[in-house]
Amino acid sequence: MNLKTNLSESEIEYKIINPGKLKKVRLTDNLFYRFLKEAPPLSEYKRTPEKILLLRLAYIGDVLMCLPLLKPIREKFPQARIDFVTSNASKEVLEGRTHFDNILSFDVPWFYKNGRWKDYFKVLKKVRKEKYDLLVDLRGDIRNILFFLLLSNSKTRVSFRIGGGAWALDYKLPIKAITHKVDFHSALLTQLNANQPDTSINIRYRNEEIEEARSFLEKLDLTNNDKLVFIHPGARLPLKTWQKEKFERLTDALLVDNHKIVGVGLGSDSMQISHVNFLNLAGKTSLPQLGALLSLGDLFIGNDSAAMHLATFSGTKKVLGIFGPSKPYETSPYKDTGHFICLDAMCRKTCDESLCNSPDYNYCMKKLDIDEVIAKAFLLLDSINC
Image 1 (cartoon, rainbow, N blue to C red):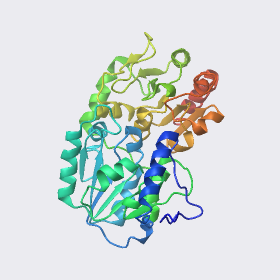
Image 2 (cartoon, one colour):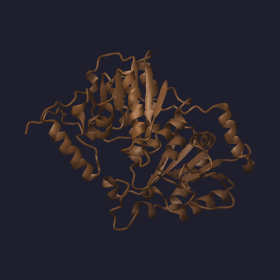
Image 3 (cartoon, helix red, strand yellow):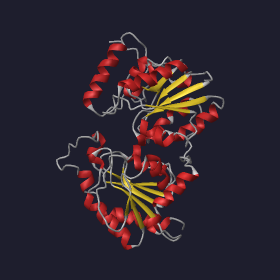
Image 4 (cartoon, one colour):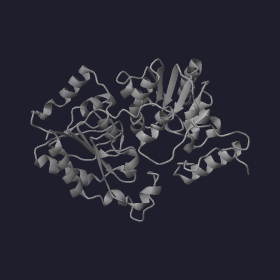
């Protein structure tokens, strides 16, 4: 079969862990490559776009890991309008606090159970009306390509080829290695010959939001010598959550040393630990309120989650991620302030984070040493203002 692909020798063909989804994508691609050519790399794009639309529909943590791209794209195309399409929750925290010109949002039905098709059509209608010069999907998902890019009425459609559907693009973003998601997204910068990602970027909270955050913390009677530690035991997927008992032991250890502890959670996150001696704000703040709170913190400790990335891009001084089935080389806290702890479990390489195939269920989280986490937490606290 003569398939019309232009895959280079060093280029990764697919990055799809779920075998059922991979099979469907391969079948779809093989069908359309009989008639259509694969898109060339974006490095061949020579125009100067006036209107750019970036697309990252899910999930909050992944969306936040797109932020380092914004400044280099603006520097490359200083006269361009840069808009963003994302989820409703992501818009809530980004709008008015980043340098996107406009943010459109909806909860996409093929990712979110509560996503509504009428919201999708409403946003798509707005996008079609704008006729963007350059539309870039930063996930690399054939569903985004077929249901959004292909119908967008945009002049140039771009995405990663590793999720399939490169035959429906004008240009592709080739990937040669599995890297951190910030670097993965930054393939766009490399292909455009733009500057590298801005790792110093933080979400800009308004003064009144910071003051509101301080009011949440009044019960702690903070002094200038106190270290403020945020604990987040939740995660979007159950397999990514560390055991309740271990978070309780961690909290006990920190309280013995008289640190100020605040428990936090997002949306449906429930506070898995109960302790009379710390401030529990889990489920009591909006996403922007949580971000403003985290901007005041000395240390964040939590599972690989949206809250972990929110702490990273809100300016928490140190961020410690607890990793189980997810891959820290892809989603660890990206900045120099970020650290992680994980167990080197071989099954992580093929884990899709929703179903555990280990004979010892959730082995990678259960066997993670509590003493190692406590020691790392104190090491990070001691390094602050040293």
